[in-house]
Image (cartoon, rainbow, N blue to C red; front, side, top):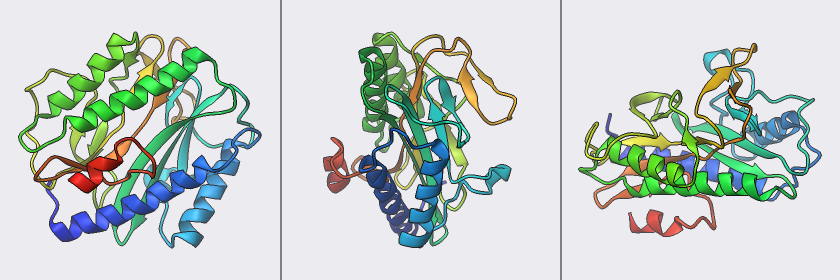
Amino acid sequence: MTKQPRELALLAESGRLLASVFELLDRTPLAGLSTLDVNDMVEHFIVHDLQARPASKGQYGYGFVLNSSLNEVVCHGVPSKTDVLRDGDIVNFDITLEKNGYIADSSKTYLVGEVNPAARKLVQTTYEAMWLGIRAVRPGARLGDIGWAIERHAKKNGYSVVHEYCGHGIGRQMHEEPQVVHFGRPGTGLTLREGMVFTIEPMLNRGRRSVRTEADGWTVVTRDGTLSAQFEHTVAVTASGVSVLTLRAGEPGAAMRSAA
């Protein structure tokens, strides 16, 4: 479950490359693009520019390099020519990347054009919740500390936390132990140790937390049709705290990587 220094270095390299994919998306005007357009752009960048592998493509029979979860889609949204991004949408892009045998996983919810204040607040609160979970990571902390920090912030702002999907260990495989749920009680669950690597990826709903899977077998939506947002980073437990392996330039947690 814990990674050796050489493995951590390789995971950090995969994380750095994946961060550059999101930095590309940050520079891209999304309005008017289909989610399939975004998928194809990301695939070209990962394969041709980064000389890496999009780890999601072919995993569990999935045919695309990313998940594109639009508005009421909670997770696992499938890219499509007909899903054209429009002013006022929110959309999460969840992307994995493998380099030298090690995988990094990250996601970000984007605001497309002018987004109404209620949707903007949901997205911002989800981002804050992820960071509160990340800041709970240190040797000797418990998995329940992460979930409690996330759930407390969500509930304080009137949102619900999806229970059916969680973070996960990651390394040579996309999904390894442990499972990292985004709710819980402090002081409970697995004790964190230096060298553990896992994702923290809370999904917050504006309405109730219940979800359903659509007929395609992939797309998960809020059961009540309300908006959902998600953010995700891959993190490593260090001797002094946490290192965010997929950190993007300009993120407020940037000091955490250099301090770890």
